[in-house]
Amino acid sequence: MRTIGALIFPGFELLDLFGPLEMFGLLDKHYKIKLIAENIGTVASNQGPNVVADLPFQTPMQFDILFVPGGAGTRSEIENRSTLSWLRETAHNAEFVLSVCTGSALLARAGLLDDMHATTNKAAFNWVQSQGPRVKWKRQARWVEDGNTITSSGVSAGMDMSLAAIARMHDTDTAVKVANWAEYNWQQDADYDQFAALNGLV
Image (cartoon, rainbow, N blue to C red; front, side, top):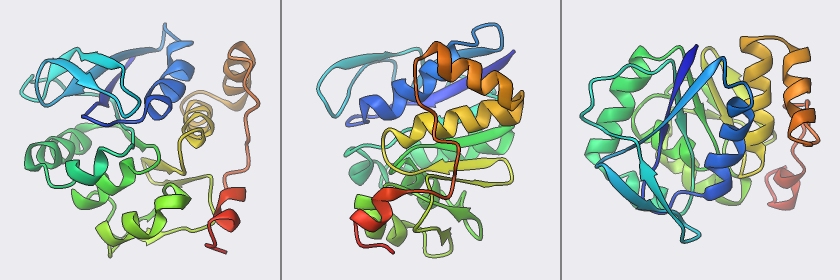
């Protein structure tokens, strides 16, 4: 059983968070999911609905998987020292670190992607790139794996990434079963990203 610590912050993107977590949640005998915020209580998503954090940052708990969504809120969250400190500490003890969309900007600002390959939302690529000048940003990628860190492109790409992570932690057959249970058409090619061209990156 692996425990996932999923960060939430004001302005996080709903699909960034719940799409990928749905994939892990379908394997409930293998994954336990906790939502973590700076403070206990409700956190407003970018789309409006509030989500309740299970635990605050100060809870002394180690997570096997650190999960970081993106969203408009990352624009201000990159200046939150508490968030960056929590990310560094949690990532240090995690088996895997996953991010969706502009969540990679938070990892980059925390110094967790230095000298590593990573990607992000193609519509916000230039801004995210500026948060991590030492990161080897990939313009054409649906998701990127570098060691135990996996970063994905924008929003829906997080579900492709989570299935790739499940394939890595278990096997491809298990990931395909999960995709079928979710009635989701899993894009298995990490290097194909039609939104890179759409946003003038290739």
